[in-house]
Every structure is written in C-alpha cells, then in structure tokens.
Image (cartoon, rainbow, N blue to C red):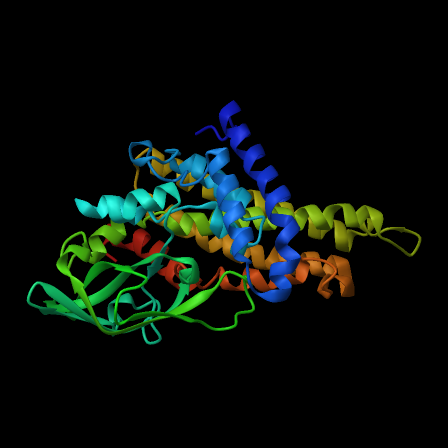
Amino acid sequence: MNFGLNEEQDMIVETVRSFVENEIYPHEDLVEKTGQVPAEIGQEIKQKSQELGFFACNMPESVGGAGLNHFDFTLVERELGRGSMGLTAFFGRPSGILMACEGEQIERYLTPAVSGKKFDALAMTEPSAGSDVRGMQCTAKADGDDWIVNGTKHFISHADIADFVIVFVATGSEETPRGTKKLITCFLVDRDTAGFEILSGYDSVSHRGYQNCVLSFQNCRLPKSQILGEIHRGFDIANNWLYGTRLTVAASCVGRARRVFDLALPYCVERKQFGQQIGKFQGVSFKLADMITEIDAADLLTLSAAWKLDAQQPANREIASAKLYASEMLARVTDEAIQIYGGMGLMDDLPLARFWRDARVERIWDGTSEIQRHIISRELLRPIGG
C-alpha cells in the first residue's frame, strides 16, 4: 500500500477543498442560524458541482458518473467533511444501491439521480427499530400485483429535498435457528405517491440544515415494478451496495477534525497568557500532539479500508474500525480545541461549538459505536469458533 497521492488525486483534494472553502463556507452561518438551506443556494451548489464534473462522482462511468474508486471517493468525502452537511448534500452523491435498478427503473430513477434531475433518500430507521433493522414495523402486504405499505420511518436524512425514497420494509417472515426473522424488501417510492407523505422531523443539535424527516405510509399502494432487487431480498442489495457507507462517515469525520485542528493550531501561537504564547505551555502543546496523532491515525485507517475495497479484499472489520475510531476521534479533537480556546470556543463567533455538536451524531448514525465494536469482535471471534 502506498498512500502517497498521485497527481490526479492531489487535484481531487485541491479541487474539492477549494469548492468547500469558496462555495460552502460562506453560507454556513446562515444555515446555522436559520436551520434551513435556501432552495436557490442548494441549486447553485448542485450546478457548480456539475460544472466541476464531481456530481455523482461515486457512480460508475457506465451510467454517467465520474467513476471514482473507493479510495478517490474517500478523498472527496474527507474534503466535503470540512463543510456543513446541509450544504454539501447538494454536491450530489446518489446512493450506490441504485445500481440495482433494472429495466424502466434505470430511466426513472438511476439516470435522473446521476444527472442531478432527481435526488434520492434512503429509509431504514423507524421509531422502534434503529440498530435492530429486522425489528422494523413498517410492512408491505401483497394485494394482487401490488403491495400495500403501512408504517412510519424516521431520522431519514435529506428526505426534504428528495424526489423519491429508497425504503426498506418487512414483507414476510422466515424461521431460522435463531428464531423468526422478518424478510425485508426494498421499494422505490416517488414523492407524490398517494398514501405517502414526507413530514418534518425533529430539531437536532447536530448538522443544522441537514434535515431528518419522518415518512408516513398509510395504505400506500405500490406496483411490483417499484421493487428494487428481489422480493424478500432487500438485505442482499443493501449488503452489496451499502457496504462502504460507514467509510464515508469516517472520511467526513477526518475532514472535519482537520478543519478544527487548523483553527486550533495558529491560535496557540496568536494567544498569549502569562507573557508567552499558550503553545509554549506543555498542557496545550501536548494537546496538539495528541490531536494530530489521532487525526492521522483515523485518516490512515480510513484510507486503508478504502484501499482494501478497491483491491476487492474483505474489509468489513477495517471499515467498522475506521468508522468507530474516526467518529470517536472527532469528539475528542473538537472537545480539546474548545479547551484550547477556553470560553471563546463556546461562542457563536467561532464554528467550534457547531463542530462539537455536529460530532455527537457521528457515533450514532450508520451504525452506532457499539454496533461497530460488535462487527469488529465478531470478525475476530468467528474464525476461531467464537
């Protein structure tokens, strides 16, 4: 493995970082204060991302995307992590699960998502089923060639701007050695479908402007043509296409931590107490040493996992380790940065308090820290009969 970036990768990093600094940073205060992203700003970000050739950069060239591999896309996500998620959502990274589209689904969903004509949102989580995905209560029952969906999803990210939703619901059950388990099917649901409603979600302390929504299904009738993949095989396509989503969380945490560090480091030279720069005090300088060491470690864990995916090697444990360590590292780094700034670190004049709040959710979504530890330990124990 050689993690020294080549010329093309350096260009990716420089281009996306410049985009974030020039097109995202200027709008962050507005989004932070209002909790909303004005539609015209979102459309402007999407258009400029398209002009750069980075919209849908995670999708294969065969369907109109830029075709970045996992390593290069991780570099993109790392730089986007520096900016407000409410704004970077418009940069455009369609869900890879849309590659499972077949027939007319390609023209109705995949192609428009890649071209930017439509936005998608992914829906699994429910009020009674978070980490326990098979515990979902949202169901679909067959009615001739149609399916009738009833239930609720919540915490559905950026569904407010979605033209359609990729939703997982229970469509049956099966007996296993560990008891009865629900069979899950994936459906594509258009925003204006009768019986389907996208509602405002909860006020969150993390990522203001990046809305979480509630999805309501009340006798929502869907033709079988809306099934993505095969009936009862929703987990199969989820495992195939959502394998690396935890990696994007890890990468964005690294990017955000580097932005926080870039604020803390010069302050240690500018700020003086007791007649000298605060960076001269061991209590502060050692914080910097620990912060950069943890950031670099998380970065390397993340890039290593991406490299293994590109090498088509098993990387489940490595991805879980990257997500676990990077998300918990971000919490420590933001906390230490605020400690370095003292009381000013908690004021709205600086973005540190926002980063501190935003960091909290990273240990929860896309699999909690506890779930990541379960994955890691399971991968270690199973080969030896554990």
